[in-house]
Length: 382
Image 1 (tube, rainbow, N blue to C red):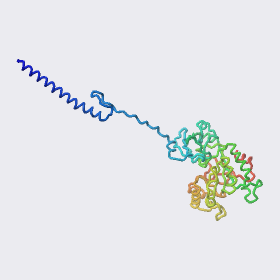
Image 2: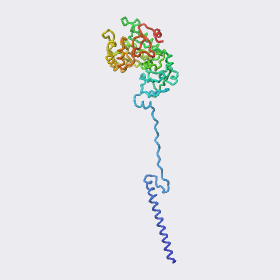
Image 3: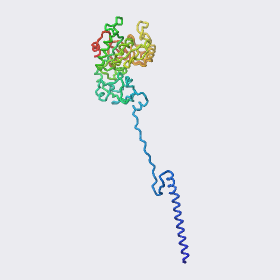
Image 4: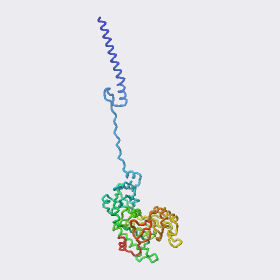
């Protein structure tokens, strides 16, 4: 083979090699170059080598907020700085929190029921609930006080046997008018008047002796055997909302923080309670006068008429629960009217104490007459 022929072949091989290399480079530029170009467009960090690992995008995770408690969710619905979320704890108790208002009395605290057990009230601490510590028991006679707009109440239970052994008889005290005259009033209503000095001394005894002051819903549950009330309990009431009650006696119970029920004749008086420790309940709207037979209208009218009167009274007062029968007059028709009006309790003027099983529409009372002293009160309520 000639020298020229060999030279042409070597040149041809070199040309094919150059074309192969060019093709490989072109393929690399088409594939890897596009990737490099795309990375460079999305970054300001400068050129990236074609054989460097592709960067992985990272982000800082958003912290998961701590879920609000049920009490916190309830508080979020109120802008009132005095709002307080009350939570409930205790064996077998699963209740939603309640929104209450600080510096006012507790309103409508729940009274749980459980077969085979008797609810023994709400307490300030778990230890108080376990010991049934009476001074620490909380109900609608107490003012709401919270820390950080929240508070937990602890429920307690006792047995039906222990409740029966307590054998509590709850006295309902019945006052009427008041006088600043130690000698009393010289009129046919003389017995109705309590000397205000005696009243203050009696209220001081109740306050200082640490009596428990049940609410009317507690009385109802107690009668059912579903709520434990201690023997050391008393209910204070006034009939008629007389001017002497408002001016003389109401300030006394307010100053001593003693829950008192004022039975109001709403056709005669429609203003609200005189202070936060007086709750108003019905003495009927317009039944406190004689009917055809000389007795009160509550035993002269039919059940529907009685119910209509009581509904009018309840509308004005914003509460039902209990009615005090004018003159203490009542019969079966009266009771039916009370039931139709949606009331649960009826208070008479008959002497006695409220026990488990007492007729809810015939609650007895301890009448306070003129001249009764603190010692007389002690004899009556213990």
